[in-house]
Length: 398
Image 1 (cartoon, rainbow, N blue to C red):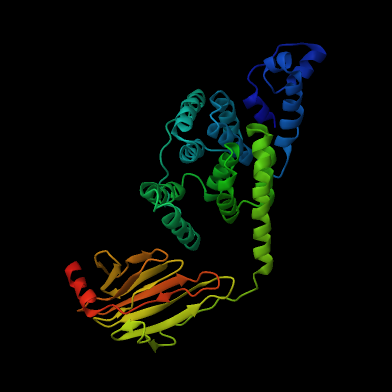
Image 2: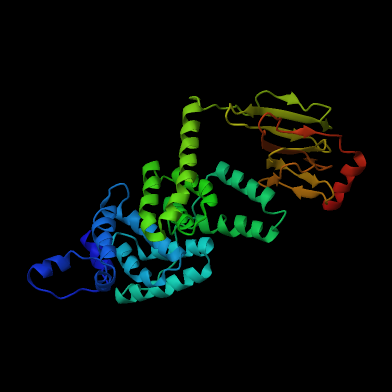
């Protein structure tokens, strides 16, 4: 607490005797006591005498929340003092720089650039040299959650704003969120704090869930609201309360209703069966078929196509992912050219897109297919078979 107070105190008033002892307990700037003594009281006794002392968030986390709120709301004059406090509370210079980088995407470049200018003054005063990028390996995002996020962006954003969709997938989550300079938990804490501070509660469910999936506890998440109320105002904090309440209730409900399940292994090649003739043309074999138990709705199988074999036209309500295991294959979306795929390629087919896939005419192909069923629906809707004439157009892709 002494370090926090020392970093944030902007001016000190010389005094003697009893007055000196009283002044040393003061944290707010001297002008506050002359202009708004009530504000001085709440600053000293409540914000720093009570809130900052609470153990539900560590001082380092409180600095992350505070600096995030100040940067995202453009309170430039307050940045230097709180960056100093953040350094005293254990944040590394590189982490502060990465916090600012994260917030450039969530509160805009002007706020971030202004924050850089003020932070540089603190670094210079403390003789902190230039910050470099971490050489650690890029962070891996949880595959299932990332696939679900990308599917939402592809279906809800891309049709209206294709460039924004691309930048979201390729830069925001494909690059920024994978940078090792700030942990996934801290990135989530920073992002969630900024969203509350700038009054964007509709964005909170995704990021609050992501924060807790990344290691932030429910108690810590709740404490963010109390802390940020002092830095972004009570209305912003109160607006976020019902949103987080719903997130907490849904997570609790999912925990209580999800039965205990064992890890299941589907052996390679198990359950070999020919591809149904009404859905496939040519020689096709399906093996390793699996279907997750409720509430999960994902399933898949390895599908092996002899040369010239293919699926019928079909769609998936929530999309499909194909991992090409061996050989060469063709994939076609209706109205577009046939595309050639090979081992290691991963194909994503968006929801409700009419398409087919199979082996090229001269070589066998095997892929592992994964699809999720919509609630009370099948994971696939089959249509008519691909004609020989339609299939032969694939040779143009080679």
